[in-house]
Length: 360
Image 1 (spheres, helix red, strand yellow):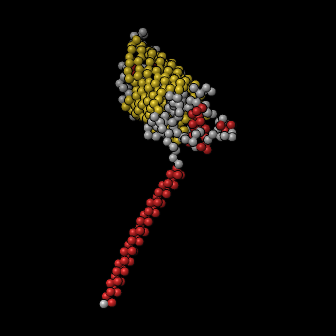
Image 2 (cartoon, rainbow, N blue to C red; image 1 turned 90 degrees about the horizontal axis):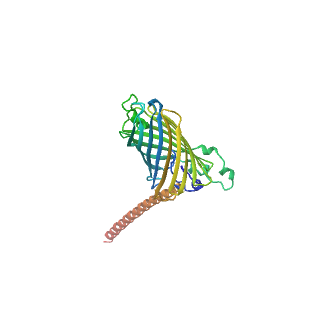
Image 3 (cartoon, rainbow, N blue to C red; image 1 turned 180 degrees about the vertical axis):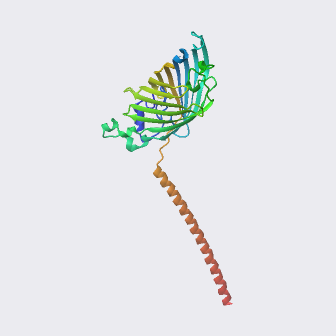
């Protein structure tokens, strides 16, 4: 499931080649958070899903929506192991009833392109590269299987992106945007806005992964959205199964929410993962109950590159510089020697001429 599905990945964390790439798929599903690590250079990954939601709104005379939402995320490891380009978005098919107009409103079917975003994620700090902190002990079982203070130091990534919100989409992620139109609740949103986030990721006791996303969204609009997501993942003894629990807090003057989700993932093979999750919130404006299913897959063109020995590279650079300097000195020495030889020969010719003159 998320980030590290099996003991194979755990072993990779302790290997001598510390890279972003993993031998099995590294999916963010079924949760909503992003992990700190990228998919790996030249890996193209697809994370696809469908959400079925049942929403009702007390303040809108219990108007309700039955939502089917198709969502996608496309991730590509670009140029380096630490960098990832991310494209994601949603498409909706809704059945809604507006009880603001009458006690028993008629059902309206709508389908529309929902919000889309494009951004980049970059890993700025990876504690798992520190061999002193995270090396595998061959003599101490306790060291390898106990919680340590160093485990509290997370990997950290930053994300920056741009949002595109079509005219018929949810404004500020509010599912009741359409029903609120032509009422005092009506809202509007800029077509283009920006978002940024800080992502942290911790690994505990080989089987637990904790991810936190601190998101600042809708930058450039009148209503900034602050979104905090915390995801805890557990890998079972059977490494093809894993579970997650997630809490998401959305803070905005237009739409705010407090969501809890539970999920399960199944690793079919190293390039396919299937998942199922459900969730709800803790309010009635609106009340939201949902179930989600999805699949993740990837096209793997990754190649391993041997790690660069910095000391060796530094020495090679120094040797090259010294060799260049020696060649320059040698060239100068030869030039001086030739010059002296010419001067000596010239002096000899002059001396011979003077001797001939005297003999005459």
